[in-house]
Amino acid sequence: MTRIPAPASGVEIRMYRAGHGDCFLLNFRRSKDNDEPFFMLIDCGMKKGSHAIDGMDIYDVIRDLHDHTGGVLDLVVVTHEHEDHVSGFPSPTSENHPFSDFTVKELWLAWTEDETDKDANKLRKKYRDQVLTLALAQHKLSAMSGADSALAEDLAEFLELETGFTSGLEILQDELADLQAGGAVDAIPMGMDEATAAFTAIFGAKDAKIKGERYKRRLQGLRHMAKKIKFLSPGDNIWTLPGVDGVQVYPFGPPREKKLLTSLNPHKAEEFHIGPFAMGEPGSGLFAAMAGDGDNTRSSSPFSPRHAIPESEVFDFDRRRSNGDIGFFAKAYRDEDKEDRRIDGDWLQDAESLALRINNEVNNTSLVLAFELPESRQILLFTGDAQRGSWISWKDLSWTVKGADKKDKTVTVRDLLARCTFYKAGHHGSHNATLNGTEDDDHPNINWMAQGDYADHFVTMIPTNKVWAFGKSRPWRHPMKAIEDALFEKAKSRVMMIKTDKGQKTKPKKQWLDKHNTAAFKKMRKEFEGRTEYAKTYVSHWVPDKL
Image (cartoon, rainbow, N blue to C red):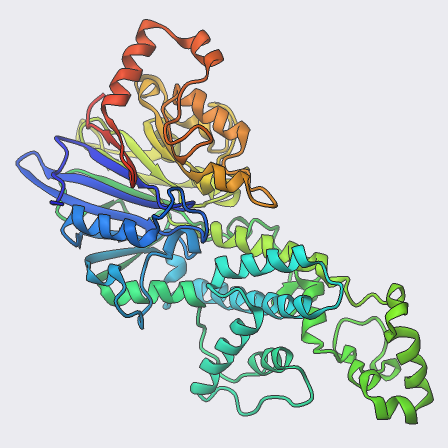
């Protein structure tokens, strides 16, 4: 294949179709007089097992990208570090990875990835502590007799999404090995199972350097490849694409305000914390159960330690024979037919809540960018997986720009969204990543988009393999029907997905056509089809720089 040419104006947007995940190639014309293409890649990943086409995987996408770009990417944008956004990038030690053949001129990341940013470092430490807590929970749950196997599988799937590992023990061993190599761990506790000993040693480590897990390493691999790296923050000055005339970029997210970034209410200083968790918030009970390493005298027990018997002693056969009290509790508490007396599994529900919360918080660290075309001033909105807290934060953002009269004027997110004619649906169309509302509401929402002269030009891409998502044992509603319907109505049927239950193309439903099938609609639909290409590996749509 040969490198694809630049569009006549505006931008060509390709949504790759390997599976459930984000991988977008944007092709800009550099200027009216320079028809050299400017290639920008936004994310490159898919969820394991979510293939949209039999026999095609993320490596096929990467090879297609290489063929069509000549192996040169002017800019790579990574929104956040989840498997379905970064699994196509190589780790620093990857050998023969097809993406390693690219030249990456510049890399843009959110401020949350900046190792010199104090707020970002605090977030990464909290995230690390929570994931390690959940890793031990998953290991213990898998080893428990009669445990909820579905929950264990769900936790394993979550850990793979966050770290690349499906085993909690592997995560703990990997983290411990890195700390030992750096001299941060002197000794590993004895008398515990391997996972608990690793967990205890990790949290007792000295001067531990904050390090992410496997998908973080994908970013490290990409960082090594990039010639320049820039970190973007909401409210930054307007950015430009290097070497492209007129296109301006507005960073919307992720927010810096803690309660919005984490989708949680701020915790007061007087509140008790258990490890990385506030008392009573999801994960606190789980951390207490895990951090106790079986010795409940150090957990959040309401009783004085002098009244507690360490669980390890209850298991000790010799202690049970020599100590009447211990023998009594061992028989009354640990025997298999006395399981109904035990409450040591109450942390299981907390584990599931924590997994969901961590996932949502990482989603909310997504880099959100709005691209403005120079002539028509159309806005292209890419939100990653940003959720409610990020959306709410946008309403306070503003920038100073030069008006047509060359005077300074203020532009707000409301102004920009009113000109939004392309929307990459947030988090595959999930329930909390596209906000509902009206044009008059105070919070940013779907109906702030595409107002006035821009209303008839709105199109959207939803990066979802709908068949796979809805076919899971616990279905993912990607997209949520109400959001899909709202986008369908907003875009007047001009919705593109990776795979639908009807195949690749998203076609108007009969009842919708009966309501809207006018001559104007037919003309608009024909124009849309003329700008859209449905290939095996991608769906492509051209947004010309004119209305």
